[in-house]
Image (cartoon, rainbow, N blue to C red; front, side, top):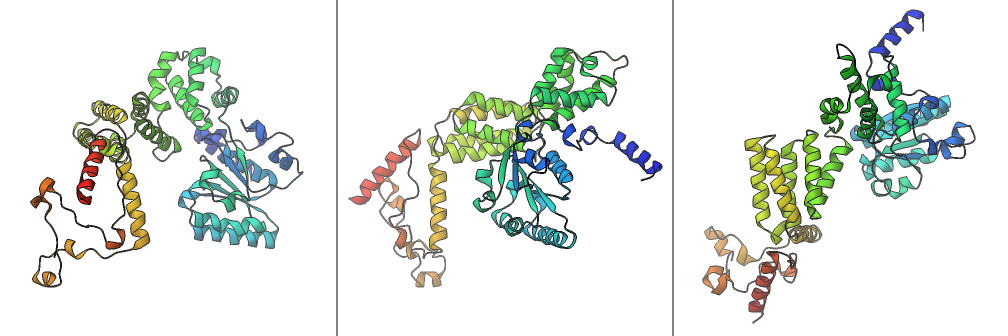
Length: 439
């Protein structure tokens, strides 16, 4: 590289996003996870040349340095760096990478570090593709995940990897990131903030280094935009950054974590937690129709016939969101959420459906009783379709004993009402019909 090339590269770095400018190139610049780098740890021994790098799974929250540390290890160990995202990588691509790594090792003696981001998103077949290549040492596998690998990875793959747990960044780690961010502009936290404002920024980071850098970028813009720069007070910081600090990408784990916590709070009959997660999502800019749609599903899946009105209310809430829009529609969502959270719960319709689906898959298309078949044409009637069918309304209580199931399933029961809410009445009614049937 000549002087001209170096100058251009330096200018490009200066204009790059703050996160790129702060990206560590060595362990000396890496922040956090010191428990993984101790001298007698797996990584510590590798970095001192005492052992080879084994197949690893980096497990931890977003923004804790999983990708960055993997890249540093690759550079330190002289590996060919092969990063992929599980989201857009199929089995065919993984095989191609494996074959290329094998060829590279045999022809050049160059080892490959295959880094699979979000490895939990690979399906079982895709995970299985990795096994022979990692076993032969064609590449060293390093997967990163925010999900519990014990649940998300198949046993065969997990048994061949060591799992290293990444922790959220501590206060001192976050301060290092902030100070380094500010120093690029010749500033420091003492120049930019009052102490309460600085502590709030650390709190908003929630142990996430990526979020901390985003916040630092926002703070620098806010500070430098002043005609006469003054220290940022807590109220000023909140006014300008509060909405941004809880914003979440709709493809991120935080997005899924929030909706998961919301649904589980509704199911768990906790109206306060339900309102908290609802507010958190809406303040972060979540699509209100997404939230409303999930509540419509929950009304049937988790409340069901314990309170049949729940579905009507959830659908009405969905309509209100579409007709009114935000911010007022948040009130409609809150009403639906508190109704669902405090309603009696039953998943018996959902469980019954799953049982019926499982039976259909096991038994295939069993013959429908002739009495239930459509007899709209003369030919159908001549074949006996509809013969023997009894019209329920012609009998007391609009009920008459007859078999509606395929003959081999005549004793099968899918729906078993609970004792909760309105479903208890349904249970008693079915018992009444059963007693009449048995007379």
